[in-house]
Image 1 (cartoon, rainbow, N blue to C red):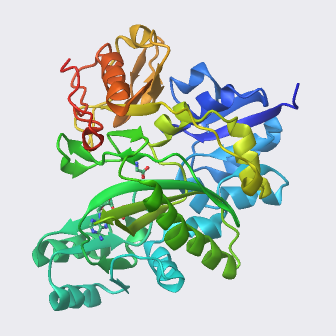
Image 2 (image 1 turned 45 degrees about the vertical axis):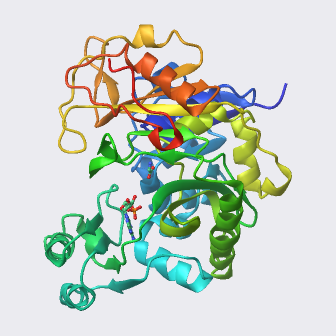
Length: 433
Ligand code: AMP
Ligand code: GLY
């Protein structure tokens, strides 16, 4: 029997449910805790009511419970230096330190690093004064993309078709400071044409190993219409990521980034997630994230055959080069079920029916995101993205059909889901239920 480690997962979304579900299957996992978790994570971990942004509270929890490994889901605690705090107390944690998390936490930092590393990305300017931003928009015209520098919960990017929209975006970000400090600087960049893809890899400071390919669906509406969301579904593998593209992304994007970070004294260990635009087969980087994508993580965890604890240990200890990661050859797809109003203001507290029936298919898992228990113990909606119904199948269309069949058993008032998850990979059209 291998030594068991007590593990804490930090976060409360579908990504963290998928990570906890996968960790629970490891013979090396002892007690599994999650802070703060949700009504689904409760089924696999002991949930502790400490917020994912509460670094001091999390450190105290780790010390109190003598946790051996902390797996950080979201970007906010990474950017706040949770991993640094844990390591300074001799604790093991998966995720980059504060300096590496800047790759996601500051778009200006990421763009400058890409320029230094020679990574393909849209032409850009970084400005720290609103009048400069307005002048630049007048000079270069539209279309143009305006981005708040700092973390803005995925909402800080404005793709502007006209100069008026771009000026208005600068007013919101820098004038009204709707994202607070994140709007101290903006990145103005050229609009790139093409098809978007997510590219997730693990880095151990030196070696970069791609995860299985995946793609998410950012827009709320079928046919990729309407406002951007955190992601309404995802699938793996992603046919857009051919073996040649994978090689090119590793060689021209990920390795140069890790090397350039190292030259700056930044030892990047964790998930390196490049948001790409693919135009005529060539990738450019839209952004970096320093954590698993949500919902991309859900299909990835269903396909990962290796022990996740072994994989995370290899990242932390710099042993990725000698640690093969095995994947289920089947496809997986995740359909996100969202609350009415999402991605705008949402209603919470609606009881969710059908979760027991939805649990019957052994090849499908209903990962919880925004769920909670009410006073009488019922599972109710508690966030914008409520569930991520994820299934395996022989093909992407097969996995998608199974995810929709499972999702059709679930009901709550006003529930929204896209009906065309996987359409770019040849799947789509749900059960219609
Ligand atoms: P980001 O958070 O930087 O990935 O931006 C959010 C979304 O805005 C992306 O998923 C793209 O759909 C879009 N976007 C960002 N930058 C660009 C760009 N330079 N050209 C075209 N679309 C972009
Ligand atoms: N699914 C996109 C993200 O996690 O940022």
